[in-house]
Amino acid sequence: MDVVLSDEDVVQPDLFVVCDPKQVQRTHIKGPPTLCVEIVSDPAMDRLLKLDLYARSGVKECWLVTPWPSVIEMLVLDGPTYRVQRVFGKDHELVSPTFPDLKIALGEVFNFPLEPGEEPPVAKEPPAPRYAATPE
Image (tube, rainbow, N blue to C red; front, side, top):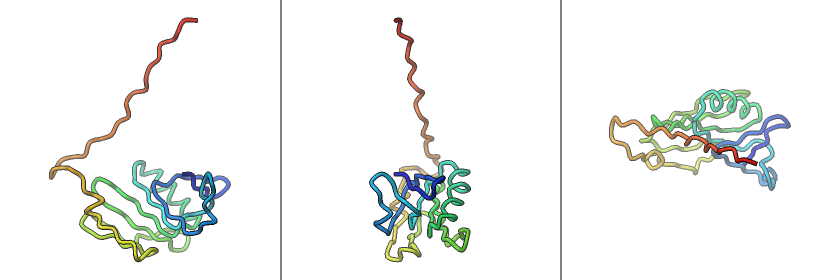
């Protein structure tokens, strides 16, 4: 779902939490969520562009999730920028400073069926289908 941060800035966080029901529109979220979670797939986009937009718009807390190696960086808004609150690994329990009752056992989140030393498979999109030109 689109999150409209400003007239020029529209993002689609991987996960987000909105606490103000007035922000929820039929087609989008209007204004900054309280929490945004990004699963890092494009570091320049997720770590630079999106974090800057989130900070400027007032998102209180962001999590950057790196699936392999399994790490979550918890960032909290501190003035105009974020500071790292804590870095969690798969053996930790994540506790949110914004939502203190939210506790997540990361061993369950990062429970990938890999053997020690085994690399995760890389997902690749199948090639686009080719269509033969049809005679008229």
